[in-house]
Length: 122
Ligand SMILES: [Zn+2]
Figure 1 (cartoon, protein in one colour):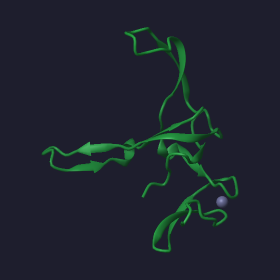
Figure 2 (tube, rainbow, N blue to C red):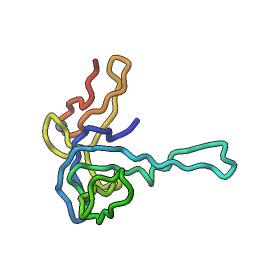
Figure 3 (tube, rainbow, N blue to C red):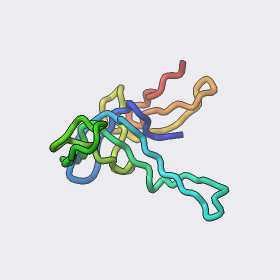
């Protein structure tokens, strides 16, 4: 089960944007195909997140064709590695480590700082 999901608020814990917070817009999970192409396994070293307003770079977008409407210099969020962020607990509003527990036969995440559930049991 994923530690961080789309829609979560995370806080940056390393790099030059340390302390910045934003909502997870996209979770990019790393996948690896074995040499015989029969098995696909997940490579956690490639798990990355797109976080709104974090790691924004200016990108020069040239007008190419008719599909791209935005041209000139645009802002794009560069994905950051999952290990560089911590989940912000919605209950105590602190960057917290996440634990997992079973509740009504469902695996839910909880905040190791205040103990509150992060996922709803319903
Ligand atoms: Zn908490």
